[in-house]
Image (tube, rainbow, N blue to C red; front, side):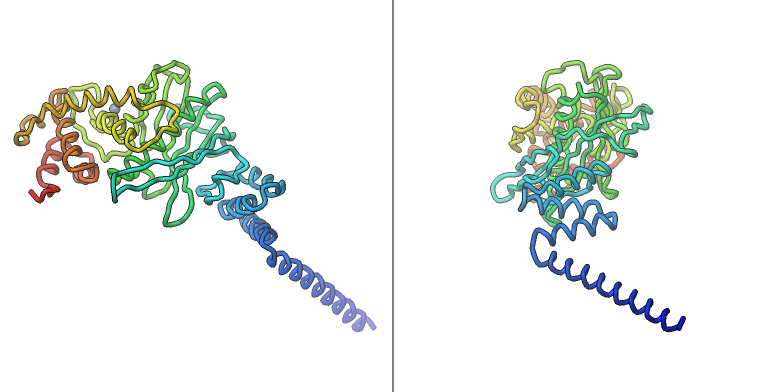
Length: 372
Ligand SMILES: [Zn+2]
């Protein structure tokens, strides 16, 4: 009797579980059968497994075909509120429920012309744990936005820059800084072949603060913009960020211990970036490039004129003072002008953490465009 009852109970349980399973299976099959529901099922499954990027991507694809889907919008905002995805799908451009802007830059000319798509968030997210703490100044920054770069091979946007700021009054400067840093990231990567986010993939952090005197500094892969409430001309904001991005992304060319800046990378970046930025059509930047380029162009000409058309004078690279630094800058700028940015990138890489003499040798030894 007891055995029979047990059998009956077990059989009933098995039957019930079979019915439940088959109902669940049937509903999943019917869900997978229609496109919108299939995306929802996939997104919730990714979410269940903690795969934030994949889940957000599916919800965004769902929103691209069904913009009124409130549930999908809610899920995206909940997920990005916890952790910002390291990558976003193409659909983020039009379907993201958080504020963002897609923009383009162009590089090169003629057949070598390439375009780069960028996506910057403009949501002013609340910084999450692990994002808000600046170790250098031991300060918490409440707000954060992200800059993504389109990766054609993976068909997705990947994060390359994160901008942090302290209070709502800094939002315009933070947005301008995020856009400018992302533009400089693309210039250095596309034209010189230099990418400071490799090999680990962590974005470059820019910290915008009201503390300190107007100016900026770089530390590792982080850029600090001080006294953000102090107004500057458009070109000055760009110049300060470009200078620091040079320190962050260039391999390091130093030894000028008798000047105010031992490493020349910052100066080189602030002379080259305005030229490349003007050619790349980055009109979407918060600060116009024109005035900066006028000043940089005349400084480039002055420095290039120091080299002349004669042989490279290695003795003039041996010093540690401003004269030697200017000669090095002139040499690098002339080399970029005649051989192109890619060749300059190669020369810089050949003397990472090196000196002016090392750079002079790299320039002298690299094969020329004309085969000389
Ligand atoms: Zn510097």
